[in-house]
Length: 406
Ligand SMILES: Cc1cc2nc3c(=O)[nH]c(=O)nc-3n(C[C@H](O)[C@H](O)[C@H](O)COP(=O)(O)OP(=O)(O)OC[C@H]3O[C@@H](n4cnc5c(N)ncnc54)[C@H](O)[C@@H]3O)c2cc1C
Image 1: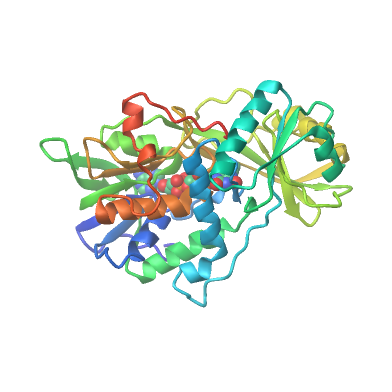
Image 2: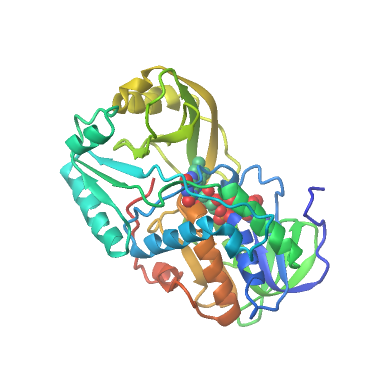
């Protein structure tokens, strides 16, 4: 058995049952234990304690302020503050390392006037929320970063404050460690069924693959790309599906002489600094359907057909590179509006969503875990108001589109 995971729950009833023990489930568990007003019991159920297929272990672990939805900017601002003050946030625990953000910035490149218009509109939202986003002409980009080919570029958008790489794996690890030390149980088992009360307004219990039936005060769906499957157990349909996202680490024969911002090429391919003359590059196939939960097959044609040509055109110095490693992971894509789905179901009030992060969930985990813990404790949000992300916008057909999806 994997250390930290029990095979069976110690009790038959918990105040909060969290389905999925990766970063969202663990953030929620930790924030619950960090709140002196919460005195309940918490069970985290994880079907795969190796996390071999979780989004959390396939992530690129970056943070940005450049979103089109103001709430997302504020969510990332809290994440930046949390990461930069990790030890203090975790009670001054001397075992917890001090972290920083490697702020190389995200640089969005627009090659059409329509896209440039979108970047200008996004910048207004970001600046109003306090982000330091700057718009750059092609000449300004060339002057600051002579390695780019900007012949087709109409406009660029960059923010060098609290945008870049952070060590998400360490935060995930410490949330789990402290949550366990404070009494949260992590059990290796899969939730395979749920029962409701006669009125259909409450989840009464979850059934595990082992056969155990656990009564619950609240259930939190923190199942990542499997969110739809978990929601179906409560007879709820949510517009979230797994989408394949590919990552390559490569070494350049002639590394750049300065840090490479996380550059979002108009083709959708993105590439960033990875240290030591290596770079991280991400992208997906043009045909991008929802896939099976267990489909992690690598597309070996993609690098040569799409990814490398795009980056070598944008950065001619990347004409000579060597791929060192590659992997495929799943985004939990919210196909309705690309924003998180949070809070309670409007009818089944003790079923909470923590889903649909569409590729920006790692940086959202501090604020979403904190908010979910507040809702579980007080039935309301005390810090950042997450109600715009509640499920009712979906049932009412009122999307809040997030346009900055990478
Ligand atoms: C290639 C890639 C790059 C990314 N880059 C970034 C980035 O740079 N910045 C960023 O902010 N985000 C990024 N993301 C997104 C981010 O990683 C995810 O949004 C985040 O990790 C989601 O965490 P989660 O806990 O919701 O889901 P997951 O990590 O997928 O965890 C869900 C867990 O639930 C478990 N589970 C599912 N069903 C059940 C069940 N029935 N019973 C018990 N357990 C169950 C699963 O086993 C899994 O461990 C990236 C994602 C990918 C794939």
